[in-house]
Image (tube, rainbow, N blue to C red; front, side, top):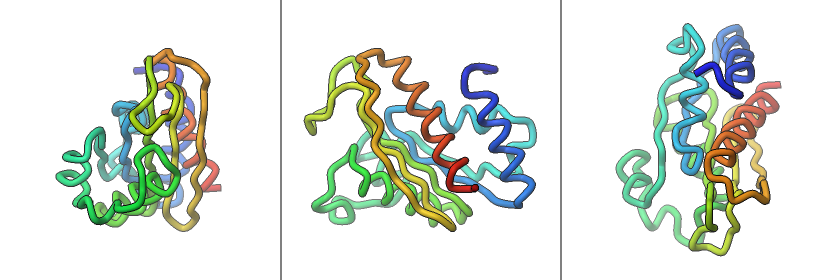
Length: 160
Protein backbone atom coordinates (compact mmCIF):
# COMPACT_ATOMS: atom_id res chain seq x y z
CA UNK A 1 0.00 0.00 0.00
CA UNK A 2 2.66 2.48 1.07
CA UNK A 3 0.14 5.29 0.95
CA UNK A 4 -0.81 8.24 3.13
CA UNK A 5 -1.67 5.99 6.10
CA UNK A 6 1.53 3.95 6.14
CA UNK A 7 3.62 6.08 8.50
CA UNK A 8 0.82 6.37 11.08
CA UNK A 9 0.12 2.64 10.93
CA UNK A 10 3.80 1.74 11.27
CA UNK A 11 4.17 3.95 14.34
CA UNK A 12 0.98 2.53 15.87
CA UNK A 13 2.06 -1.03 15.14
CA UNK A 14 5.40 -0.49 16.84
CA UNK A 15 3.71 1.07 19.90
CA UNK A 16 1.17 -1.73 20.19
CA UNK A 17 3.86 -4.40 19.87
CA UNK A 18 6.10 -2.69 22.43
CA UNK A 19 3.23 -2.58 24.94
CA UNK A 20 1.99 -6.09 24.16
CA UNK A 21 -1.43 -4.67 23.24
CA UNK A 22 -3.89 -5.67 20.53
CA UNK A 23 -6.56 -4.00 18.40
CA UNK A 24 -9.77 -5.02 16.66
CA UNK A 25 -11.55 -2.81 14.11
CA UNK A 26 -15.18 -2.19 13.12
CA UNK A 27 -15.31 0.25 10.24
CA UNK A 28 -18.00 1.36 7.85
CA UNK A 29 -17.47 4.16 5.38
CA UNK A 30 -13.67 3.84 5.56
CA UNK A 31 -14.28 0.62 3.64
CA UNK A 32 -11.50 -1.46 5.15
CA UNK A 33 -8.74 1.15 4.87
CA UNK A 34 -8.17 1.23 8.64
CA UNK A 35 -7.62 -2.52 8.78
CA UNK A 36 -5.55 -2.50 5.58
CA UNK A 37 -3.24 0.19 6.96
CA UNK A 38 -2.70 -1.69 10.21
CA UNK A 39 -2.13 -4.96 8.35
CA UNK A 40 0.38 -3.41 5.96
CA UNK A 41 2.92 -3.29 8.79
CA UNK A 42 5.20 -6.34 8.90
CA UNK A 43 4.51 -8.31 12.08
CA UNK A 44 0.90 -7.09 12.29
CA UNK A 45 -0.19 -10.48 13.61
CA UNK A 46 1.38 -9.49 16.93
CA UNK A 47 -1.26 -6.78 17.48
CA UNK A 48 -4.09 -7.01 14.92
CA UNK A 49 -6.78 -9.49 15.99
CA UNK A 50 -9.30 -8.83 13.22
CA UNK A 51 -11.94 -6.52 11.97
CA UNK A 52 -14.85 -6.04 9.66
CA UNK A 53 -16.57 -3.58 7.41
CA UNK A 54 -19.88 -3.08 9.20
CA UNK A 55 -21.71 -1.43 6.32
CA UNK A 56 -25.26 -2.65 6.92
CA UNK A 57 -27.55 -3.77 9.72
CA UNK A 58 -27.17 -7.32 8.43
CA UNK A 59 -23.38 -7.07 8.72
CA UNK A 60 -23.69 -5.58 12.21
CA UNK A 61 -25.73 -8.58 13.29
CA UNK A 62 -23.71 -11.27 11.49
CA UNK A 63 -20.22 -9.95 12.20
CA UNK A 64 -20.65 -8.35 15.63
CA UNK A 65 -23.72 -10.12 16.99
CA UNK A 66 -25.52 -6.84 17.62
CA UNK A 67 -29.27 -7.16 17.21
CA UNK A 68 -31.79 -4.46 16.40
CA UNK A 69 -32.75 -4.24 20.09
CA UNK A 70 -29.07 -3.68 21.03
CA UNK A 71 -29.07 -0.46 19.03
CA UNK A 72 -32.61 0.70 19.89
CA UNK A 73 -32.74 4.47 20.29
CA UNK A 74 -29.32 4.86 18.69
CA UNK A 75 -28.63 5.88 15.13
CA UNK A 76 -25.73 4.96 12.90
CA UNK A 77 -23.19 7.69 12.22
CA UNK A 78 -23.32 8.88 15.83
CA UNK A 79 -20.76 8.86 18.62
CA UNK A 80 -22.79 6.52 20.88
CA UNK A 81 -23.12 4.05 18.00
CA UNK A 82 -19.39 4.26 17.22
CA UNK A 83 -18.61 3.59 20.90
CA UNK A 84 -20.94 0.59 20.90
CA UNK A 85 -19.16 -0.81 17.84
CA UNK A 86 -15.71 -0.20 19.39
CA UNK A 87 -16.71 -1.86 22.67
CA UNK A 88 -18.34 -4.79 20.93
CA UNK A 89 -15.49 -5.57 18.52
CA UNK A 90 -13.00 -5.27 21.40
CA UNK A 91 -15.01 -7.63 23.61
CA UNK A 92 -15.82 -10.11 20.83
CA UNK A 93 -12.20 -10.48 19.78
CA UNK A 94 -10.64 -10.10 23.24
CA UNK A 95 -8.53 -7.13 22.16
CA UNK A 96 -6.96 -4.45 24.32
CA UNK A 97 -8.44 -1.79 22.03
CA UNK A 98 -11.54 -1.59 19.85
CA UNK A 99 -11.53 1.00 17.09
CA UNK A 100 -14.68 1.98 15.19
CA UNK A 101 -15.74 4.32 12.39
CA UNK A 102 -19.23 5.00 11.03
CA UNK A 103 -20.20 7.72 8.58
CA UNK A 104 -21.02 8.94 5.08
CA UNK A 105 -18.13 8.96 2.63
CA UNK A 106 -20.07 10.59 -0.20
CA UNK A 107 -20.67 11.85 -2.75
CA UNK A 108 -24.02 12.35 -1.00
CA UNK A 109 -25.00 12.23 2.65
CA UNK A 110 -26.63 9.35 4.48
CA UNK A 111 -30.25 8.59 5.33
CA UNK A 112 -29.86 10.18 8.77
CA UNK A 113 -29.35 13.69 7.39
CA UNK A 114 -25.56 13.77 7.71
CA UNK A 115 -23.66 15.39 4.86
CA UNK A 116 -20.98 13.64 2.85
CA UNK A 117 -17.73 13.78 4.77
CA UNK A 118 -19.39 13.09 8.14
CA UNK A 119 -18.07 10.29 10.32
CA UNK A 120 -18.00 9.35 13.98
CA UNK A 121 -14.99 7.56 15.40
CA UNK A 122 -14.49 5.81 18.70
CA UNK A 123 -11.92 3.84 20.61
CA UNK A 124 -12.62 1.56 23.56
CA UNK A 125 -10.11 -0.01 25.89
CA UNK A 126 -8.12 1.24 28.87
CA UNK A 127 -9.40 4.65 27.73
CA UNK A 128 -12.55 5.50 25.81
CA UNK A 129 -13.16 8.44 23.54
CA UNK A 130 -15.26 9.37 20.54
CA UNK A 131 -15.50 12.33 18.22
CA UNK A 132 -17.21 13.49 15.06
CA UNK A 133 -15.31 14.54 11.96
CA UNK A 134 -16.79 16.69 9.19
CA UNK A 135 -14.54 17.06 6.13
CA UNK A 136 -17.02 19.20 4.20
CA UNK A 137 -16.10 17.33 1.02
CA UNK A 138 -18.21 15.12 -1.27
CA UNK A 139 -15.04 13.30 -2.52
CA UNK A 140 -15.72 9.68 -1.53
CA UNK A 141 -12.17 8.35 -1.95
CA UNK A 142 -10.56 11.30 -0.17
CA UNK A 143 -13.08 11.04 2.68
CA UNK A 144 -12.37 7.34 3.11
CA UNK A 145 -8.66 8.05 3.51
CA UNK A 146 -9.34 10.95 5.87
CA UNK A 147 -11.68 8.81 7.98
CA UNK A 148 -9.01 6.10 8.25
CA UNK A 149 -6.31 8.66 9.12
CA UNK A 150 -8.52 10.15 11.84
CA UNK A 151 -9.22 6.68 13.26
CA UNK A 152 -5.51 5.85 13.42
CA UNK A 153 -4.84 9.23 15.06
CA UNK A 154 -7.57 8.57 17.64
CA UNK A 155 -6.06 5.19 18.52
CA UNK A 156 -2.63 6.79 18.85
CA UNK A 157 -4.09 9.44 21.18
CA UNK A 158 -5.80 6.80 23.30
CA UNK A 159 -2.66 4.67 23.58
CA UNK A 160 -0.77 7.74 24.77
